Length: 125
Image 1 (cartoon, rainbow, N blue to C red):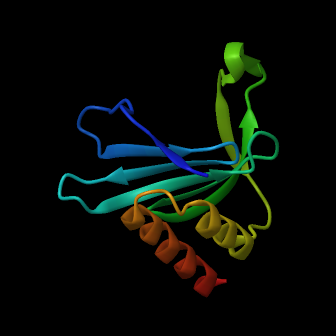
Image 2: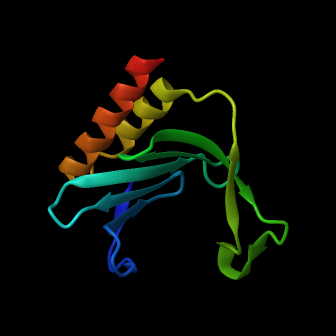
């Protein structure tokens, strides 16, 4: 089940970032100063076959595979570098259903935001 990481490093002059994680998911949500959401990145399929759905309000959704750098993993399972690469079919319905089931314990407002965006994406397919 997803849990929120507290004390996430914030970048100056950027939207606030929240991070939720478990063994399968990483969810990053960006929040403007006025409390509205500016976007999210939902990474799924860890540790092997990871993909990412990134949705920024100013550019819309992008689905990609996550590729490790040529240097691979470094100590304690940390990634030295990961890059997003073009990826094929996105099972939005399957990802949305699993996310809804496994995100019960996170902030309900964040959960609803992701669900609304996933429904928008399902409607456009």
